[in-house]
Image (tube, rainbow, N blue to C red):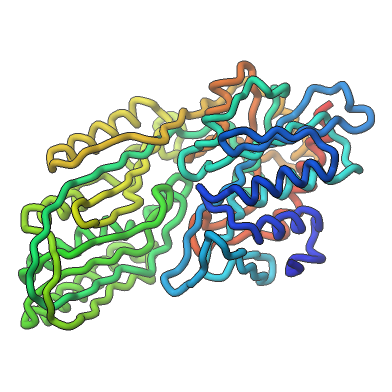
Length: 482
């Protein structure tokens, strides 16, 4: 663990590298949670782990700040685990393989986990540094944020003394986020019937898409591999008879899927017609997404003729119809905040099993009625096809607060340091802040962070220089919060 040695701020990158050595995908955070507990115990800090996997660490105020109101520093310990199809990385046991290239830090063919590992590292650096000026600190590390804000939802907020919270889960330096969308996941399960037939198996892969965070990057109009799979199946159906063995795509409900895999069975004489349909589809999609998705690839690979279990025609038609008709992408822009997405959804994961076809849709909206309307649309479509739909992981939005002393202080500090005002904004993504604001009366919250690009993808990058500036900014904020 020495790749980041010598980088500034040294303790921030020390802790980031330390937690990058610990597997911490959502649902697999036990080891990093123990690391946080041990960190606190070694420094004699008060630590309170809870049954939901969260960890709260308290540190007294520095000299002159002992009686100041406490400030809560908050970040989530889990990360989204995605990798390229040629990576053999095992997120359950393997440390991240970090690389440096000029100003950027990244991981080899996997997500980097700077969302929100860099927030965790900055908070640990605050707790570790005895030279900083700061009020009493309540450091809250939440669990399983990426799969529905589960840790934050289960956290007992009555133990918090502070009424000022700085969330370190934003990804753009110079932005102060003061509001976010609410969201929920909808899980659709369609029963399917299978039959056995003899034919030529063909594996079709859709790849090369950019993907991205289904909230912050949904407005970039990037292609969704799962939606493309439905369109491609429709094109093949127009070219030749086929039977669908399976279709699968996406890894996380909150990540725009970059790849999809389709397995069909055809008569060997129809392979040329199917190949022609696939080539035509790739050309059309490349034109359609020119300037947005320039690396889309659609490839077909045939196997050897044998007997295979495939969907019967009724099940096949229903699966294709769902893929074609389920909503995806931006559904409505905000009229109150120009340029902001108001309502969207992401067809994040699709899978075909022995007896069911399942898909997960992540919907978001800054207006509760918009989210309800999206859920109604999805339920109506899915249930007409015979699919069962359940909701999970719903979380509230966070309304912009007109009066925020914390925000005012952070704006003033930024102006003093950089000679300009930061951008104060709301975002079309879910932050744990909404849960805390809804359960802690009078809580004043601002979210900030450094530049992290392409989160939830294998192209995730963390800016070294931005991290250094953001660390300096955080230190100055804490010094002003008497």
